[in-house]
Amino acid sequence: MPRKIPKIAVDILKVIAITGLVVIAATSPYFVPNLIKVLSKRNRRFNKGYSKKDTEQTMRNLKRSKIVSFKEKDGKFFIELTAKGKKKFKEIKIDELKNKTPKDWDGLWRIIIFDIPESKKYGRAALRGKMKELGFYQLQKSVWTLPYECEKEIELLVELFDIDTFVNFIVAKRIKDDIKLKKYFGLP
Image (cartoon, rainbow, N blue to C red):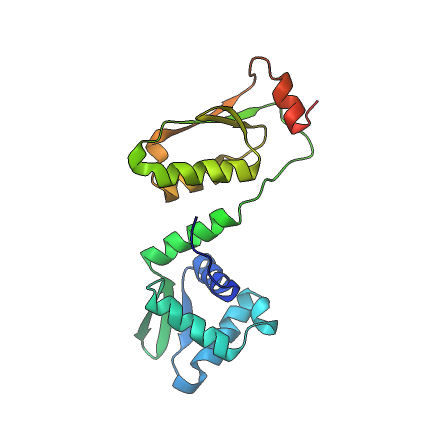
């Protein structure tokens, strides 16, 4: 999976990704304090935990890594995610995916089937790993099931690893001999 990045960088990327663009007045000595003020309005963590020095260093690293870009126009800086930054944000979202088990089962099985070629083995391994982490049950080598809504999570994974043409998502009312499955998931 993706290389871990510091929490402050994750928080900055989330703010930029959600807002699409961060605009800061470009007055030099106040750039970082202004940035912290803008980020604080959108994420409370900046009020408490991140210093001016940490924020400045993180922004330099994000820019140097080509994850964010800065553009100056009419006395303002525009900070936005680059293509690499958007990909990094998707990786962060995938890392944060959790199994959202509803109180009541809707009676539907979500089945993922795939035949991913060797040339995409990294994507295949990432998909399998995340499905295990989310609690999927492996019916066969490339057939996994979960009784809860998970289509958006799977779409995010297959899009990131460019394996969408090799993965199929099925919603089924019945799986033959599902007693073992129901027991595994603790379903009635």
